[in-house]
Length: 178
Image 1 (cartoon, rainbow, N blue to C red):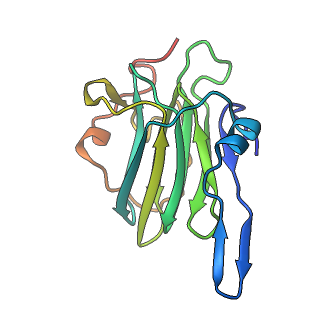
Image 2 (image 1 turned 90 degrees about the horizontal axis):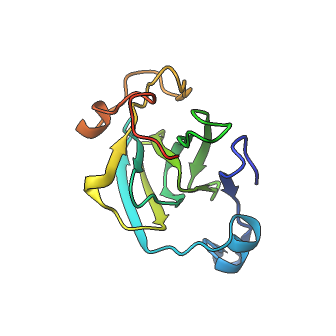
């Protein structure tokens, strides 16, 4: 499914139910290439666990940029992608999508975008397939509350942040992609 940021896609899977339970296809390389993007090789799966109110992001790697396919295994999150490509007509724009174990939605966040999410349920477990390895020395963080981006996080109080996210830079002070 297309979004307001053309390169960012929401992926939905059909649920198959029978007398003993249900199943769905979480990933199919052929369908991904046909409906989302072609030429993507995933090299690593990252699994995160967080409690209600934790906000992770907005993260990206300035070198070795990662494309990310994110889904929620347990719980519910509000997931955000921000275009940080200076040459893009959507630079600084964002898209937010509710991902949950119940709705089985996934979001494709291509290289060139910052990514983050906030946990809406008591706890959430997220699985993120990435197209390049994690290089901590190249990881960057944009401040989740940057007014120039203006993400409308669906939260009522201050989120719980890791130190690296508290220290995030404003969009126009951060390193960008060309």
